[in-house]
View: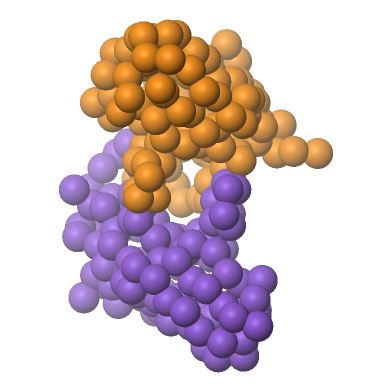
Length: 117
Length: 113
């Protein structure tokens, strides 16, 4: 029973292509996130959605477009892929948003390794 | 930015030894969390310590927090080969109403049998 599942696990594609990564959580959480981990393991937040509403857009190029059809799903579509987009993309969820008075742990998926050639 | 920084970047020890990793951050926080990442896997939450707490234990893990120095440490006692992983600290930002967790680059711990 995978809590946060994302597909595909590996994605190899050419520059200029468009690709999508899907994420689903079965934890009943309100908030979902996309994080990007670079080759040096630096993990940076990209987007946060709370109950289908975009909360955080961390100055990510508009080639990246998240979509949340319902609070259990958060997909990431990337247009016109560039070499620098190669990274591992992690989906995560939390019970509530991490606002000022909320504290909570993140539950991560296993990651989607994107390689742009 | 609030980004945490772990120190050392890499740590190599023998089974049975203790492993200590440190984390420093920049702004005031509500809480600090530690996560573990096995190679090729997602991050797994280990422990959360609130800003009004100084020390917390969970099994073989001991976390300390010094808000005056804006630093935290994670101690793993009696380490095992299975503890080999990257360890990340993550902080929020007390001054922000939005929810963000800031991660560092992690400490790569290798425990030799």
